[in-house]
Amino acid sequence: MFTNRRNFLQKLSGLAGITAITPFFNTLEGKNFLHLLDDYQNASAEEMMTDETFWYQIKQAYSVSPNIMNLNNGGVCPQPKVVQEAVERYNRMSNEAPSHYMWHILDQGREPLRMRLADLAGCDPEEIAINRNSSEGLETVIFGLRLEKGDEVVLTKQDYPNVINAWKQREKRDGIVLKWISFDFPIEDKSLIVKKFVEAFTSKTKVVNITQMINWIGQILPVREIANEAHKRGIEVLVDAAHSFAHFGFKINDLNCDYLATSLHKWLCAPFGSGMLYVRKNKIKNLYPHFAAADPESEDIRKFENLGTRSFAIEQAIGEAINFHHMIGMERKEKRLHYLKNYWSERAMEFPGVSVKTSLKPEWACAIALLSVEGKKPGEVAGYLFNKHRIHAVGIEWENISGVRITPNVYTTTNDLDWLVKAIRELASESFTKKG
Image 1: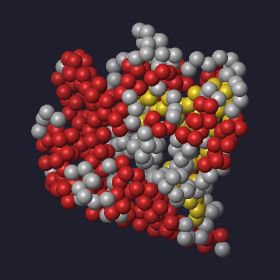
Image 2: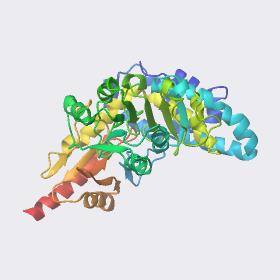
Image 3: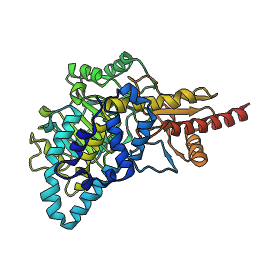
């Protein structure tokens, strides 16, 4: 069942009136948006996937530029208007009397928020710490693990640079040994991926680093299967979920991992600079916090939240992003994102010299795909798209991966992607003519 308007409003309003705290819903776009929830409350995910009327209305809930087509949501996602309004509202409140409103009012919202994030993530609230981004969460684990000289860590060359650099720092500082795997994506063979990880495990392996969705290309890795093999050998599992959380459906407890971190300002569309760290309950005690705590060996997940003064407005507005996410629904969102990826990819691959180096199957990829045009460097393709058509995407050249990352979001329409396909056709035609 589609989340109906009444339930959505109840989630949004809390103790205050909905129109008082979210001005967007007083606008024509906002009122139309709420009426649409009523109209679609019984629609299935399959029906919703291709219904442009609904998704056009979703677009009105954002303030994205009409002059630049943003197809780099893989970098950071924009916030719905209700989330932006919440940040502004909490900021204004904080500035009335900062130490009072920040520490005595807004700070009291962290525990309810922790519970809501845990519910969304599918784990115990006592395993969730709220921080600022994936890098902070992952580096908390990387620098907090009790590794000794000679201990081995398995990771891939396609992992995120901040994560790789953190592990390299531990290698240089503490003498741990990094065991590298390298893949040629896309891969649609689960056993092949798991096998490469297992072959890198030895009796000295203490940790495996798994990027659930490779940010460069959108490849999804079989985390649970790798984690199961790791745990058979007493190896701890760290998951980089920067691009997977709130992008496609999964629960942390289903992954069988020990640690996980994500950026909420990506696919949850929460405020910029918001993130989440998961630590399995029995692992909390022996993981040192990145920022000093009164008791570094505490079993309390909150020891990882000693960040000092930070933006309480950003933190508390995460709740509005969760509301908006639930309004759409994870299944509908995932199906729509996968549909959009395939919509442009299937059309673009019909042109000479054009390829998409990402799987079109839902178990292996979702919204992110890598575009390649024969005879053109990634930077040239990205430059053409922006300079000629005002389409913002990013060129990628990183460890066996070369192309332009195209990343739509829930506010992207098929009309937008028709324009993208037109631009790709023109570029391919120019390239093919010159080659001929």
